[in-house]
Length: 125
Image (cartoon, rainbow, N blue to C red; front, side, top):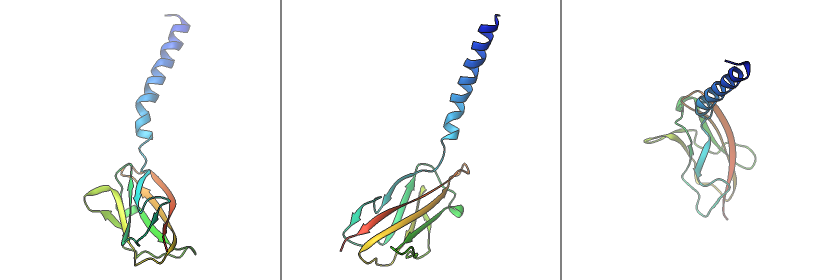
């Protein structure tokens, strides 16, 4: 076999391996959607905030907080998985006054990848 053909075969094999491993590398728990919606405005204060992710979570190592405009936690600290859905977690909140709230999350997916982020929602006056 010529050296050119050998190099081409090697590169093709390397490309195939890279493609085969790509789905495993993409298995992070990214925020999919939330209630209240990301950046949304609700007319009535929600009793809880629920976030859904693209992958199942390790609930013991995932967090969810709701903060007021000053960065003070306003949730009840009772974060837990949403019943029957390993991709979601929720936290209850007391009746929220009108204003903007920040939801901070940290998600550890079952494949041990960590992602984190935040978003806001608004309770209308």
